[in-house]
Image: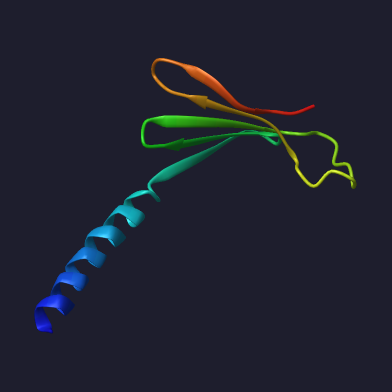
Length: 78
């Protein structure tokens, strides 16, 4: 029983270590409507809509993923 408990404890500590390492991200406010999120050698450029319409629940206009080799638009809205 102890071996099972110790092995579960060891596995959970390994998994929690990966979760905590994901939080090493930086946020840079480029303007009131643009933010740059940098996580693990990948940058995300998020552009927000200027006017907030009550009918729309989503305020994100465009999300672009930027790596060393490419730029990919993940979301492009009107």
